[in-house]
Image 1 (cartoon, one colour):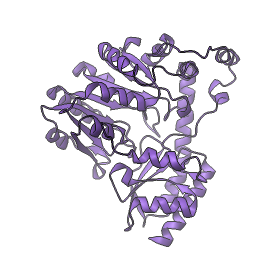
Image 2 (image 1 turned 180 degrees about the vertical axis):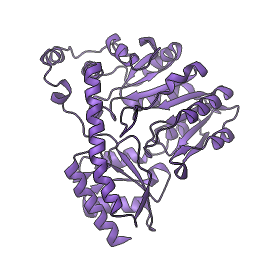
Image 3 (image 1 turned 180 degrees about the horizontal axis):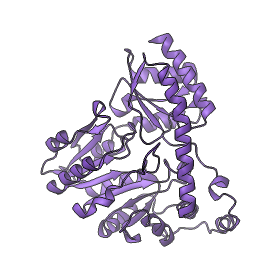
Length: 375
């Protein structure tokens, strides 16, 4: 199997830890261990006493109970704990796709599923979100793309990079199309809980009575500000969760024992609400700064304000390739952002606004100065 280069992850892996100002991240500024435990001495003692052996490989019962509690009607038997949402996506596609199957993927999107589909089957077809409709899905295009060979319809909601959230009608329409085709719906919901305003994003899991061939992937990296724990999960019908677990035996085997314990702490209901409130406050504060900067540069950009996630997806109005812009910003200005090329959409840039606000202000100032000099 040959897979295409994952351009987004390659750029970030190369540069995010060496560049002066990193605005490429799509999550909020990470919590420290001290902030996560918030003075809970009993939990700290519990962590320090944790044997560093293998935990239960699909996630401890306590962790899977905490995850299942997020999804009414589910049980620990629906849950597989994974090393990040990326592993959740990987084992999901690996377990479902066979040569000759079709994968229909929402675009723009985090391109892991697109790249894996190219490797596993080679038969990957897009359906698009439309900027003119506030980055809503083109349901008619989805209907045209789905055939009797469609094995998976893959969506990302809230969306990376657009920051959009699907309405109930579009969610139902997508699920109905999957049901009619007998396809699996795979919903990456890792930005659920990172809403800048409004209600928490509804999970596709709440619609499973209409079509139970669905797998939800999620994790603690984005909305929770805990990417270093590398904790994710899948939610699936029990027999499919067991199948995913058997595939996971061939990858990382088990989550970290410490990550399992710390994820339990993060998902304790009161602590979880405190963490998500912190995320919303960061998004609201920092987006105000970004919006003011965009208002001062309307000649350069058009964008739809994101409803969720710490990312702005900007259409720019000058004739330079997006990767060239990003390379020059990094080398000449010490600022890292993400080119639209990483999402198959040149003339776009993705700017993260979930980090420390002073660094973001300085990074935006450098970007504005560079663009004004080079447009």
